[in-house]
Image (tube, rainbow, N blue to C red; front, side):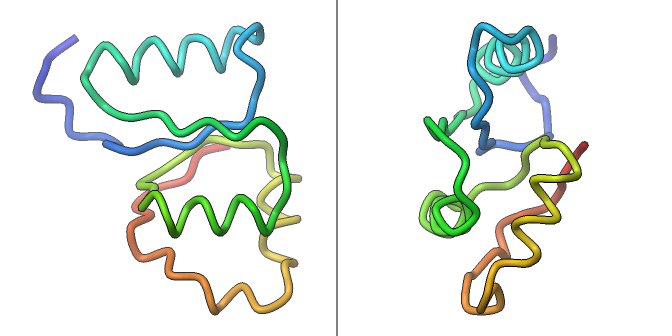
Length: 88
């Protein structure tokens, strides 16, 4: 893995680390010197607040998570300008 990786420098996850995809995501993020912000449980409002506060660049989640977040009342009040990519 190259140390000049130009992907997300600040990622967000809420999946338990005993799940292989969350664990591999964490390992990769640390190996390239980036930051992983971890949420203990999923809540759409808490997720938006965390993304704004921590200036999250990207994350991966199930489509259901994205649908719940997009249905959050007043979503436009959150500054998500730091987000450059989302994966599912």
